[in-house]
Image 1 (tube, rainbow, N blue to C red):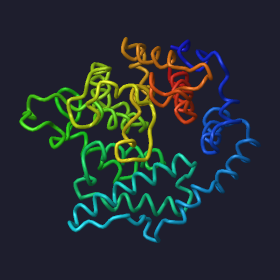
Image 2 (cartoon, rainbow, N blue to C red; image 1 turned 30 degrees about the vertical axis):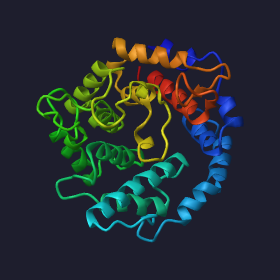
Image 3 (cartoon, one colour; image 1 turned 45 degrees about the horizontal axis):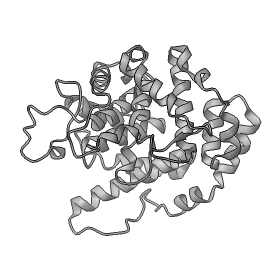
Image 4 (cartoon, rainbow, N blue to C red; image 1 turned 90 degrees about the horizontal axis):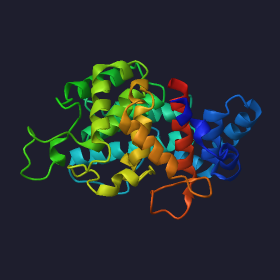
Amino acid sequence: MKKYGLKTIKIDLIPVLIEQAPLPVQYLTVERLLSHEKELLNRLRQEVQHFRPRERLLESQREDGLWNLKKNYKIEEQQKSMQFFLQLQNMMQLLDFGCTKELPAIQKGLIAILKNQKSDGKFPLLQHHQGLALWLLVKYGLAGNPFVEKGFRWLTKRQRDDGGWLSPTMLAEGVPIKTASSGIWTTLIITQAFSSHSRLRNTEACQKGAAFLLDMFLKNNHTTLFPEPDAWNHLYIEYTENGLFRGGTLRFLEALAPLPNCHGHPNFKKALNWLIDQQMPSGLWPSIAGRSIEGDFRVTYRVLAVLSEIDRVG
């Protein structure tokens, strides 16, 4: 699979990202793809610490690690759920701003996420929120933490016979859960959490989730999470209610890239070839394939990162 890696790209895009992309993308690009350039890395690390949107978000954090909701909800359970979701949104944004768990504010934010966990390992909201929370915790370096491991065990117990996951409330009314197949995007988010964990990526749960996804590539989802046919073309991820779970074919590849046994599957190759073909004349990739007029720097960084991951494990 080496021929599918970074060498596939005709234009060297690393200089383009370093010179033209927003500061956090510049930093992430150098950290991921040019980490040997210590002087450049240190300079960008210093600069990104003073990136104003990052400073603003950190300044607005409360002492307990949470952020204030713009709206208060009368039902306490709903209030807790919305507070938890806001926590995921902001902590994901801070991750993309180059923050690490060495920062006291991030430590507080991570503790605030873990405080939402019930004794059985469940976090608020639905199963794809559980998957995203665990992915975030692993990305911040908390793989192996007992609470994080408990959260993964909760998901493992709920994996279905087809290898996927399904939140019953996301089914259309009248659809029996016993005969319904698992949700594609719910399974994608959860499998990505497992595959990002160096030990759990080798478990049966992760491998079964990956097999389900490979079978479902380009199929329409039947739950309320992105049922539209072009969901696979939405390559961007953003910090909105649904945007956190977007990513389409690029996220599909990001979830499966750490699993070398998936790389030879026809649908993995098909997804990869399609993604490479979406490169625009500018050299960048679009946020929505077939619809965006301009390239997206963040999506382009993620494409290069996934190609580098395929090179690394292939």
